Amino acid sequence: MKDKIYHNKFAGFYDYFQHGVKGDVNFYLNYFKNFKGKILEIGAGTGRITIPLLKKGLDVTALDISSRMLAILKEEAKKERLSPKLVLADMRTFHLKQKFEAIIVTFRAFQHLYSVDDQLKALKCFKKHLKPNGILIFDIYTPNLKYIQKGDWQWHKDQDINLPSVKGKVRIDYRNRYDMARQMMNQEYRFSYPGGRKEAVPLRMRFFFRFEIKHLLRLAGFKVKNLYGDFSKSKFKSGSPEMIWIVSPERK
Image (cartoon, rainbow, N blue to C red; front, top):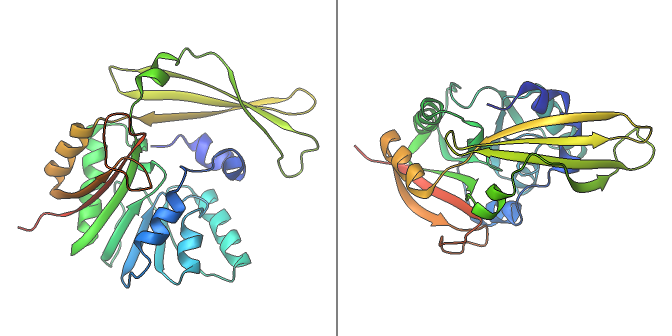
C-alpha cells in the first residue's frame, strides 16, 4: 500500500504536483451521466473525481486509507456546499453494511497493491460490496519499455509550482527505477524550496500486464465487459497508454 509518508505527510501538496490522467474525470462523468445507483470510489484521495461526480447529483461514497486526504476532500467539498460520505479504510479489508451498483478504483490506486495476495484480497472485497449486476471500473497504466529503460535513478526536472505559504517557486524533480523481477516502479519526487531546503516524496507502484489482470479477475470471480486503452474509450492495442477495465461479478 502507499507509504504513509506519501499519503499523509505530503497530502497537502498532492494536488499541486499530481493532476490525474488526461480525460479521466470526463470519462467518469459521461459514464455515470444517467446513473441512478450508489457508487463507491476507492482511493478517492482529495476528491479530484469525487467532487465533480457529487456536483452532478450522483450518490458517491469516498473511501481512502489516508485520513489527511479525506480531510482535504471534506474541506474542498464544503466549498461547493457538498457533504460527502467518507470512509477511512484499507481497500483490502474494508467492511460496509451496504452494497453498491458501481465501484470505481480511480487514478491507478489498484497499483498500490504490491502482492498477488493483496490484489486478490482487494478484488474479493470489491466483489463482496457489489450488487449482482454491479460494475467495477479501475485503471492502470500500461508498462512502456521506453520509460522502463530510462529508469536510471537520475534526477530529471518535472515542473515548477507554487505552494501555499511558500514565497517563490518550488522546483520538483523526479527519479525512478524499475524492478522487473517484482514488477515494481520505485520513484521519488524531490521538492526544492527557495532558500535551499529539500524534501523527497517516495512512491512505489506495481505495474501489470494485460493477461495478468485478466487471470486475477477470473480468480476473483469477475468477467470482463470492456477494456479500453485510454479514457477516450479507444480500443486497447499495442501502444495504448492505459488499461481501463470494466468488469462485473460472475454469476454463480
